[in-house]
Image (tube, rainbow, N blue to C red; front, side, top):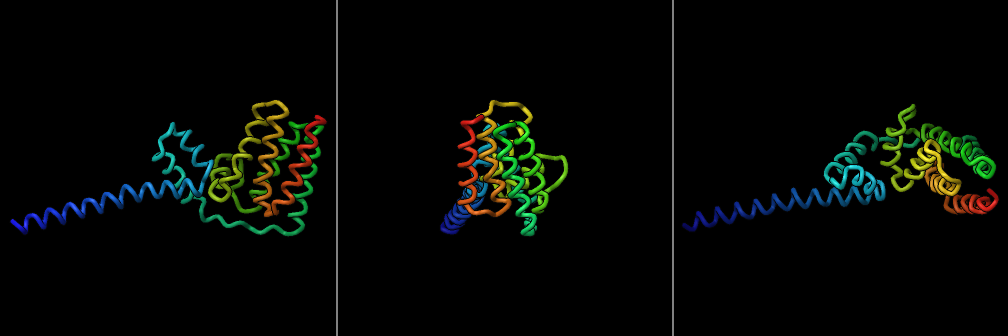
Length: 193
């Protein structure tokens, strides 16, 4: 009788341990993905109608597909060229917001390609890869891409443009001072459009 009780106790302890590691481990993975992807995690969960398991599977697949990407370095000349292109695009926004968004979209595609992210026409594949490495900034790129196609008022375009600057800076590896300076210039230009 004592042996049966000991065996039952061991089985219960093993079952509890298995439950803890399987269920709690999965929850910890979700927290880890949420920490890594931030707002991108929430966007994917919403796209999956609140199904966190489906969203986490998608994000885990992104990490498997794109986690190995290593940024290719930019030459100082390329960095200067991209910085000048962004400045011209920002100045263009005052006169022609739609053209500026088109250029910002193309510029971010070029810069991400030069840094080693997927090239080509598949915008979703590019943004999926960018989300693995720059999850906190990729939504600005998505907004520029969608606002320029869908049409929007000038304020929506300006907000998308300013938000996309975060990804530009992250890809270029500029410091926050330069980014804030650029955003302040665009905010000042807002009153003139």
